[in-house]
Image 1 (cartoon, rainbow, N blue to C red):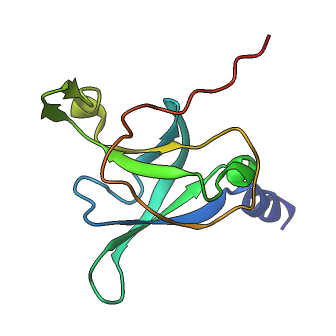
Image 2 (spheres, rainbow, N blue to C red; image 1 turned 60 degrees about the vertical axis):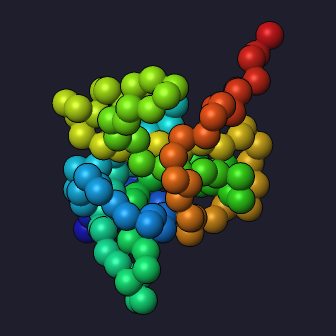
Length: 130
């Protein structure tokens, strides 16, 4: 019983991200990353009640929940060719992943998010320790 409780209590927090589509996102396989570090994994992919969105349920490290506030943003990273160049080439072998971005200030944690259509033009800069 103690091992089961320890395993359950160490599980990450469950968040939901609404996407217009979830091409390439696979439950049990697709990772959630922050600054190229895996911080979670998709557990479930389903439609919203009115079928207008795809709801992705992902379990992320619970230590990060204080940073997943109203400033947190998520989007799917997949290979893409545009006038800015080619992005997401690493996903050709590894598969798509969900990238997250947020600031380093803890806030009121949220568990529901609406995904951005793509990566922001500039990523949030982390303060440099001196």
